[in-house]
Length: 197
Image 1: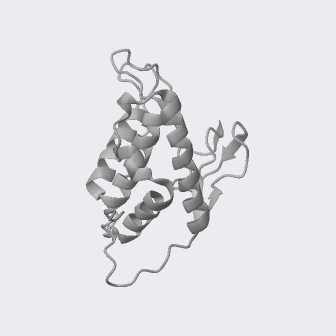
Image 2: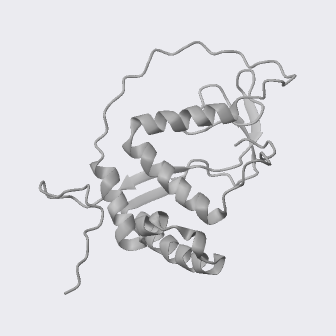
Image 3: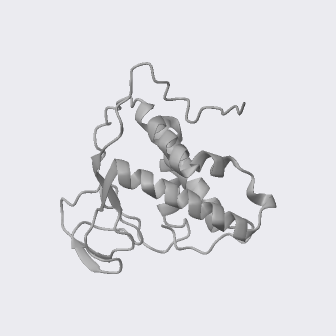
């Protein structure tokens, strides 16, 4: 993550607004390759050193052959989003305009959303840290480390071994237990409309 000072011309979103942004980015990345490419471009721009930096530029690694892209079915993402809505009211929360609510009201709602979403994740996924060491631990990454599971930040230059501190242990899914769906199920209906009689 970029540790530069925030731009004084841009207001930093509140913690609760960042929750909505994080979930929106997560599901947008899962469901749209174009959106994911935009997120990747933003991440690269954030990690790039400032243009006026006095540091020597990092060596450019040889280009790998282009990856073959496979088209992902959105059904599993839509199913997960439906479960997060059913048990955590996640979509209701993120679609609500929160400007008229007090921080206390938002905090109380966020606790309910958190509890419901946590229940869904625990019920349908086994999630484990990528690294077992505690945050702040010093580690050495030798040549051949898994670049898909470990993202280098800060002053990245040269070749392995890299020595640094864990700022986030990362997360990986070790098991998925999503319910099986009948063929006629419409995954795009995340929550049916309710009509009280």
